[in-house]
Image 1 (cartoon, rainbow, N blue to C red):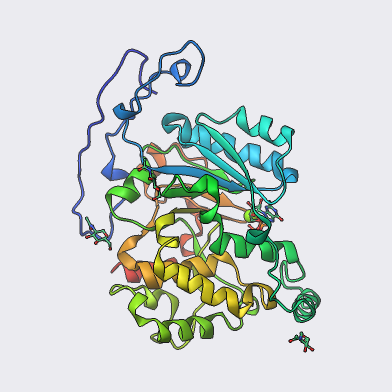
Image 2 (cartoon, rainbow, N blue to C red):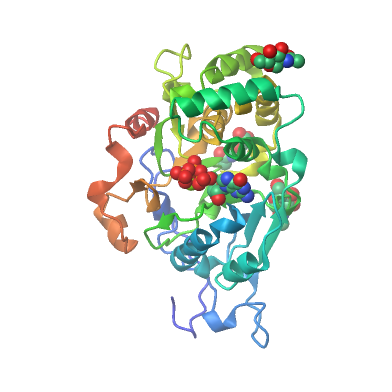
Length: 370
Ligand SMILES: Nc1nc2c(ncn2[C@@H]2O[C@H](COP(=O)(O)OP(=O)(O)OP(=O)(O)O)[C@@H](O)[C@H]2O)c(=O)[nH]1
Ligand SMILES: *[C@@H]1O[C@H](CO)[C@@H](O)[C@H](O)[C@H]1NC(C)=O
Ligand SMILES: *[C@@H]1O[C@H](CO)[C@@H](O)[C@H](O)[C@H]1NC(C)=O
Ligand SMILES: *[C@@H]1O[C@H](CO)[C@@H](O)[C@H](O)[C@H]1NC(C)=O
Ligand SMILES: [Mg+2]
């Protein structure tokens, strides 16, 4: 935090070669310090001067959490860490969504931590619940089968609602219409490093569509017919495939089969205008009508990942290596000594998931020419 009296204009020093695939996002804003005044000067605090937002460079973005009222303790811990490590310096708004009304207790406990405006939204029933054209007899049979087989969340209907909502509906919620970028935050995750740059501004300035920290394999059993459905869609709509598509990240045989690699979507920084655009909209609607969100257990992680990889393309996807992030049981921790130190990270780089046997990071490295 700069001293209270210091009001400097942001200095942008571009220090990397734009085409380098090894770009460290934070080096872009190495010397960037937002002009935010002292904590007591936050705008909206009665009696305090408003710090002109124009002094800071902020993106059109929000922090976003989907949660149940019963998630409140974990939500509070995640908000606290996000604020301490990033948002208290930038004061982006928060949007919380829930298919039920948030309790006063939930609202009170997260609001006390947020440095920016906080919005609570209820999700429309037709954006959340299983649509009427799903054959519930068949869906129930499949849920029971998966549960018997011990597939994680295999028997859960609410988990399926959540996955479908996150795949194709959240960015249509009225509270998100005012925003382009979002950072998805789940209850009970950890942000392990100080953020010395603004990833939203980075996304915007570098034309990025999708940012991730962890990539891994999906359970085949939950997506048995997803890839054949994707292939059918692509055959019908070759015009949506990006010239620089990341097909080789998803498939080891030019698209014949899916290697199960996906970005772990409990962390996402992404551009909702891409989800709202013609390619992803057509893609999601096609998948949705096949029913796999209910007859199987298609997750938003493979669905977003396949959408971004094929229709946005390799150069639109950003690995945020400097963001220390943990969702049980995996952690991405910056392994570069300078990033780890600058971030005052609480994670152990030796235990970063990046090159774990279950990680797809090596495949992503190859996409970027490493
Ligand atoms: N409102 C609401 N939110 C939900 C529901 N189910 C899950 N969520 C939220 O959706 C996100 C993902 O759910 P999780 O239960 O964390 O699923 P996961 O990350 O695949 O699995 P975990 O390993 O258990 O964390 C979290 O932000 C949850 O709070 C639900 O039924 N209603
Ligand atoms: C619904 O699924 C069940 C079980 O698979 C099947 O027997 C039934 O014919 C289906 N109903 C319709 C209307 O397709
Ligand atoms: C922010 O982005 C949304 C979605 O693209 C757009 O509708 C809105 O006008 C933008 N707001 C500003 C201030 O640019
Ligand atoms: C950003 O992406 C758009 C859409 O693909 C493209 O038309 C534009 O030229 C890109 N801009 C830069 C600066 O790369
Ligand atoms: Mg989770």
